[in-house]
Image (cartoon, rainbow, N blue to C red):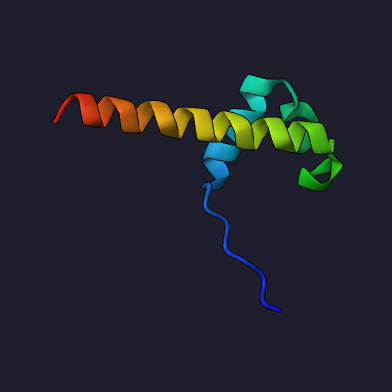
Length: 61
């Protein structure tokens, strides 16, 4: 099975890690060192931001 390409850019992932408070862990130990809960919170926040962006786009149409 091939490896899936990520949907989120690296920059966006780092931004989310900073916002959620585990950037230092990522910086020092890599993405594999974050807790499953942190990864889930990162995905949840990315979805929230995408929904807000879509709502704003729909409002402006």
